[in-house]
Length: 389
Image 1 (cartoon, rainbow, N blue to C red):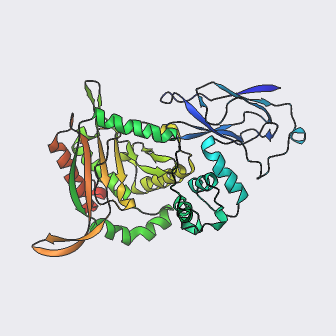
Image 2: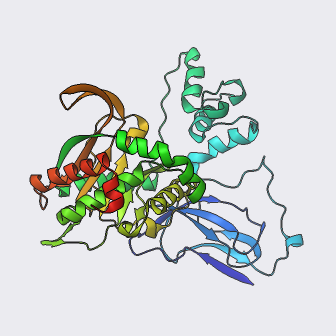
Image 3: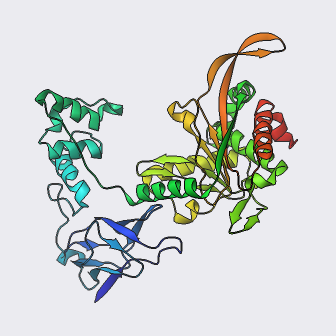
């Protein structure tokens, strides 16, 4: 029986998606629940599994097409048996891909022993560069885009590359502009002595990992400290809805995570009820699934406050942009040893600059500054977090 394959019902917050890669060619057999195609929304990449066993007999939606919920994109014939279907495509005959990825895939298949990033493979394909002749500088010898450009520089050519923004990147750009145009953003700064937290972590990290199966990082301390501070100053955890201020009786904390497709901010729901171990486990899971493109849309929706760590990339100071509809965001930065004065003596301490960006429409400077001071105080005496003081 020939059945229709349609775009699944997208969440209310997502109006459309873009078709990416078909994982089967026309005539090939596919098993039930096996992924047919990837769909990119402005938040995550979704998989569309086959509803039944059968052969893919017609493809209506092409890679790169914009689609909506319920739109027909293919036909599946459930009467076809595996032995009667076309054999699976070999590596030399790749499944149809989005135009921006096709050239890179061709090079990857012809030089399958060469590990290269997709951007590097595309530049090589566009300019006739054999990746086998390019020395990779990435992890494990992986060829990076810069390696290909460097190899081509000897030809004296001036290279340019134009690629369309991913749907996620476009949405991130839209939200950042929306935030700047809608919110009256101000940023206040402070610095925190990280030695108490670092000493605590160094003392217990091995026992923590052995008991909980996850490494003890620093983000969980900042989440806990932010929640403790916002309990004192609830307006920082509030949001604007029209002419109303909505005070949230819960703390859904967004954790900014970098992914191959761009920045995503998955949410720790009811983080006030989570232990340090719970937070670390959830953040580790977010990081892994963000890398694999496996985060659910619901996990990226909402949130009452966010924490972002530019220090991971070496940033010393920045002014983070609020993630709407939230009203504040905490920015962490790199920890560096600096000379500071304690009790009249100059000592060396591991110091970090903190930044709190806030919406001045509802949060006054007093509440913003005091919130950041409360975060600083909690981190410099982490026992207070454990004792709820």
